[in-house]
Length: 100
Image (cartoon, rainbow, N blue to C red):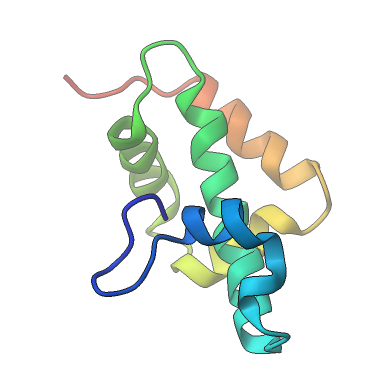
């Protein structure tokens, strides 16, 4: 999202410069982008927690949700039932103790 995969531009740069126009009215790009953005926004929210960085947020998501969800299903999970599933993830994060 932030760094991009060479030789492609980072998605963050695309959003900052062109909002959603960069997806060129391609429904598959738009759908995937919405799923990706839901996870990116969740990671940003988790990083706001005291002493959480991107690695801690990703470790939490992997440890807690990877056994049950793949990336796509997890993104769809946090987008369903607006607020409810996302709030459950944030509540689980509040109880999470990062490994040292």
